[in-house]
Every structure is written in structure tokens, then in C-alpha cells.
View 1: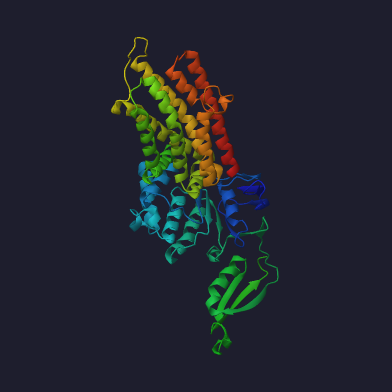
View 2: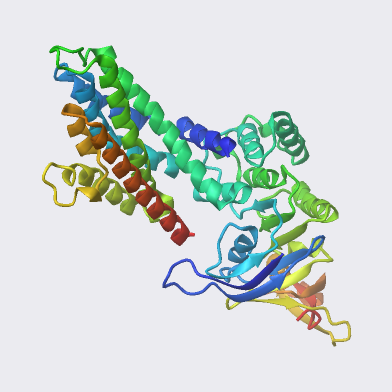
Length: 267
Length: 229
């Protein structure tokens, strides 16, 4: 699938969110879309998935069957989990028994079996997100588009996401996934697209490029967030260790940690 | 696509928001038939006029019930064109159910009468004209409701304005002597026709007018949807 010179803005006189984007992804490939909040990651994913139509340019060779997991599942609907998923399975073209089988299979696998009779508005954010994941997988997609798929998921299901991605890739599909939490470290073979200023650049690995290791001291309470941000920015976090001087009284958090990151290998 | 139509209708019915236009429709029909008995063609002609804004409102509610993200999920599943068509067809089905209620209602409350004078139309002919009058109103009302929907106008306030202007405009611009009657769907002209002489050529002309107006309004809706993304 190719995005060829894609431009997009939401209003006629609004600013261009995407400007001349040229990217391609092939069967069996996964690309991670990185970038700061509001730069257009979700927009890029929605253009790729066929949710948004580019103002200029075109999307070529999009697979016929697309599964899209939105950043926020629309839980404000008057259906139970089972009724909604069965309805979406039929919308996706599955007949009665096949739809029931797919719904049963995915609700079991994603830990939704106990919620089958629960109405969507009553679900927690994480459980609703699982429903969003399930509806995208009811028919094996040729292109799976995941917009912040780890958001709100429990640890067990977070581990399941790379597994699902692998299954799509193994079946010859392609996967696009955005992430600002650094979870895509779980996808070691992924291509990395960085969105900034309306354009998309693909980070290419350069084995011969010199790598520098930068040590960053952060308050211990902020380690998780810092690691996530560094990973989202494309840096490789090598390890996190307690600060040797953390025995000394700290002015703010009382403890510190040092994050070692390799810089330069991915940019 | 039929699965998506069923899903949208189910969403509309399960939210309970279908009750509001249903009750409004019953109120206007009750008011219409509460004043006395009329012959079917004449009664149904007026019934189609008063139902027009109700059907448009019902369409707007049906299309607005679905969250925007769910509409996009449906687009991904069936494609943009089919998603838009499914919404319109679901609204059309709901409108036809309302029309069926409107056609049966006067017989239940004694609002219609048979021929009084030998020159009066027979009941079957009157009913046929009434069905025709309602069927002319359905696509125009669905198109107006679609134009007023959130997916078309973007904001709730604009939608109400479009609905109100369309509903009032259909009556005002359709009055006898209007200089621009073609700006509105021919529901008023249809009511005048069912109450008077219904020549075949007139029926054909009104049908063509309704089809052309509805096609233009549907075109406007699709253009707005395209513009809204």
C-alpha cells in the first residue's frame, strides 16, 4: 500500500495536517507511527485505513479488508458487547454461524467472555478498548490500523497485542500502529515513521553510524514517563539503574534514577 | 449493507430516541383527525404535509444517534459510499413505518369517511392517492433530515436551523401563488391536488418534481458529507 503525495486538512481554510506525505508499506510489514501529541499520527492512520480521504494525493493498493482500532472506542451505543460484535461481524460480511463463531472466539481470547451481556456504556475504558480490538479482528484484516492500542489495556492484553500483530503479519497482512507510551519496543522488527510538521520521515537503520550513550538523571517517580517519551521519540533506552548518589537526601523526590539511552542510532 | 441498515435501525430503536418523533407524529395526526371526518385523498394529502417535518426530524435523530467514530468504523468495514447509503436507507425504512402508521391511524379514530356524493372518489382511489402523497414526501423528508444531520452540518445548532428552515420553507414556499415553489418539495401542491382534480399529467409532474428535488437534496447531503470528511 502506498500513500502518494498525501495532503490533508480538516477544514477548507484550516492548516494542513499532512503535507505531501509519501510512504509505503508492504505485506508482512509493520510500521510504528511516532510523534508528539497533535502532530497528526491519528490522521495519518485514518488516511491509511480509509477513514479520511486525502485532500490531495492518493492512497494506492490499500488491502480490501481493513481493521481499524480507534484511539477511543465509541462506547456510547445501546448494545451489549455480544450484540455489538455480532452486528459488526455481519457488517463485515460474516454470515450468522460464522459471525457467532468469530465473536465467541475473540471475546474468549480477549477476556471479554464475562462481559458479553454487558451494555457498552457500562464498560470500563480498558474493556471498551478490548471491544474495539475485537471488532477489528473479527475478519482477518489485510491491513490492521491500531491507534494507541495499548491505551487502557491490562497487562495481559497488552502482551496480546504484539501476538495479534504477528498473526496478521504471518497471514500476509500489514500493520500500522501509533504509540506514544513506548510500548512499541515490543515490536522489534517494526519500521518507524516519525510525523512532524505535517511530514512523515522514515527512520532508517544505519549500522555504521556512530552511537552515543547519554545518561539522563530523572526523579525516580518520573522514570516510567521519561522512558516512554524517549522511546516514543525513537531513542533506544538501554537500561534504568538507581542513582548511586540517591542515598543522599534529595530536594524533590527523595530518590533518583539514571536512564541510559543510546542516541543517534535511529535518526 | 443490509446488516449495517439493521444495526443502525437497532441503535435508533434501542436508544429510545425513536419515541420523540413517534409521539410528535401521533400528536399531529390526532390534531388533524380530531376536527372531523374527511374523505381519504383529502385527509391523506394534509397528513403528508404535517408528517413531512416529523419524518425529517426522525431522520436527523436516526443519523445522529450513531457516534461519529462508529460511523467511521462502518466506513472502514463497508466503504464510504455504502455507509452513506445504508444510513439513508435505514432512515427510509423508519419513515415508511411512520407512513404506514399515518395511513392506518385515521381508520382507527374514525377520521375518514367514504364517498358522500356520487362525484366523490371511491375509497380505494382515495387511499391510492394518499399512499402516493406520502411516498412523495418520504424521500424529500429523508433528504432534509440527512442535510440537517450532524455528519452533514457538523454542529447541532446548524442542524436544527436547517431542519426548521426546511420544514417551514416547504410549507411557505409551497403556498398557492408562491413565486419560487420549486425551491421546496411539492408536498403542498400534492395536498392541493389530492383535494381537487388529480389529472394523470399533474400526478406525473408532481412525481417528477419530488424526485428532482429529492435528488438535488441528496446530492447536497453527499456533497456535505464529502466536505466534512
